[in-house]
Image 1 (cartoon, rainbow, N blue to C red):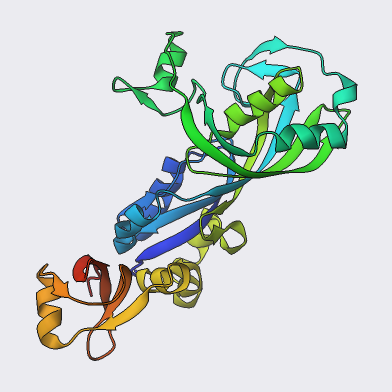
Image 2 (image 1 turned 180 degrees about the vertical axis):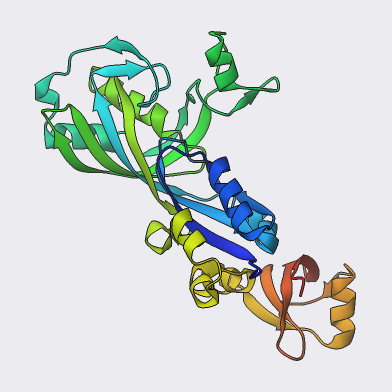
Length: 299
């Protein structure tokens, strides 16, 4: 079996959880596996998966901005704020608001830093329990608003017949699109829920470079295919982090690998570390003229 270490961009299908995807990839390669940001079961799109030594990159992938394609259904409110929930309220939709200019203005009003109340059906923990556990038992919980930022919202199209709005949103980590949909509906003087959600960008990664779990399964023994789709640790810091290169002689390398901080006058930041044979060793970080070990790649 081919050993895999790095990041693979998965195009998650509807109906499976992020945890399901992690388990399937883990089963394919029998390697330690994780993900960098949960997608709801009914959502589709980009889910970066960390495999093998790639799991060491998790701390570098936790604050990524996101981009989503969203379908908002107006006139119906559900208990989960998405299409999986039960209808708890129906309200009329004024056809006069379903005009491009009006909706564009409403969407643009959400751009900027703000506080958002997360949906009750979410995995946020309060007193050791996830919010959806309280919601399923109809237990009221006072929710604390979270600071988020909407960078841009672009109207894609409107369906007057179906009372649906499609838009693209660029936002910070921690933004709940279900809550955003409900807030947009409120500004349109009605109710609504998130009918469809597709994540197309996570930080530096784009859905266009992703593959499905089924495609991964089909090519699990194809070394060229895997090399074309796996982002290894060296490539990640070279292509996406623009980390400069440091070559260490044998003496300094031994100290580096043993966790000794080395004097170095280069600017603060992450660096790709190589030995004198130009072999990739791992990642070091310089802080205040000291180079310390961050990630060491096992051979």
